[in-house]
Length: 360
Image (cartoon, rainbow, N blue to C red; front, side, top):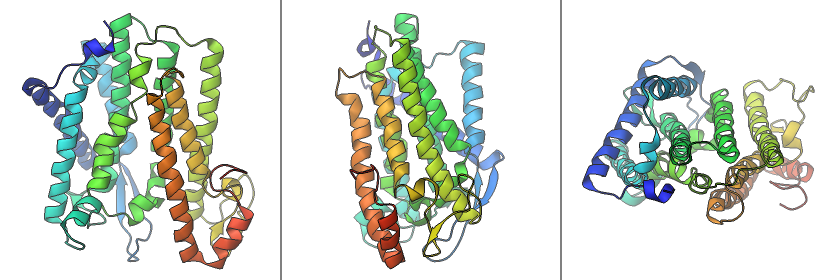
């Protein structure tokens, strides 16, 4: 049997099971976000000048889910393969839940720009349910969810072939490193455009509940049935590429966040250099304007490379990210020029490249 033989068709019974799995998972995370301890952090000023206080429970939830999964699998013999078996039913239920949450947000939020725009883009910057900021919370079922999906594919490979291939081990390790480095500095998210200025509607809800867990796990479909394992040099080389890309991605983001919170903090052992008194031109931000995007694309290319080069479909993941981030980098340039004026022009002359030195 191959992976295709494991997948169950969508039926009333599988949809009911999937509903219990999705609602139970998201509900448990919500209760955890409400009750478990977390870091207290202040957000950055929003477009209206107001700030918001946040309780960041991502790292707590990340480890609680890991501990729970470990106990269930190794203590009680529970298999995670049913996540793969119900994949398409879970996909359908996640879409339905995204629609229901979006409708609830529209029904309870302000009305600004018409039904479709308010429903899709959102009309409330920080909707809060039972004391939980929904925008920050939705990152938890999104990121922890995709990790569970990836682990479930590893479980399926073990069930099918009795072992895990080196490429599956790489994929598991890459995802764990990606998520751990996200949660260890979760407060960085408070400085992102999504959190500061994007209103919360179906676009972000669907992205969190559907786009990330189901598209980001795409390479797994081709890794599971690979019977020829990676050689040691392939595994080591790909791991080094992923480490370098992840380091660039995280360091660039952390440098920006540290500068925003502590402007005088050193970067690469030196006092930060500024353009116009406000624009950071030290560290990676003195090399390029969006090298954090470059690092992120590199990480997703590594995810896809675990599936080899015999199929094009795993590369839809980094390709979609390249399109989205290249477009966003151009929008960021226009927005920053409108905000900083000539200082932005001066900065661009210094950090000449957006994402790829000498090319873009």
